[in-house]
Image (cartoon, rainbow, N blue to C red; front, side, top):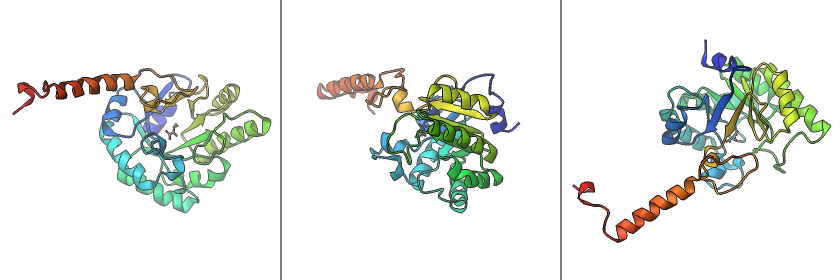
Length: 256
Ligand code: KIV
């Protein structure tokens, strides 16, 4: 069974665990616990302080993905296609092929529904596994508010999810989608939904790793901080600085 079929077969049996990673060392830890590791274009804001993920380019995604690849042995590795790299099927295919070839990832993620239907079909026809992304779409959203407040928004998300499934995606990230809508979409599909801020009813969950460990000082409703790594780093660096100033580090053991 292919890696993709295997993961889809987990639907309704066990929840899918997913996180983002941008580098080898982090990926090698996550690989022990995750089904899917995403090299997300969120790296634009998390690492580079860009105002939006729209500033992330293909080369940056490829370089981080090459690093992540070195840390993964078993999880499915998916790479975000950055903004303006999939404006039509031809452009998407050229860039997706480059991502797959250079990073040896297992698939790519694209944001959008109806607009990218033909593009997704083209990628899938060319044996490139695709993860969709609906709800709040950071590459194009202006308001960054949760989705599913009104009938139009709800119907569009339901239609887009069905279209993406028809086009051949193996899973769809649902970002900040209202609970009852996320539940409905998840039940109506044979493929996986991976939620972020979209309730426990999705087939799996994803978070940005830096948010989960509390490295990112920001607080978001949909994030649970499982650690406060900033404190831990602060304490370690404080101790190091004290020891350097007191000439306690390096000692004999640390010297040649
Ligand atoms: O870019 C990203 O990290 C993402 C996840 C938040 C789903 O798209």
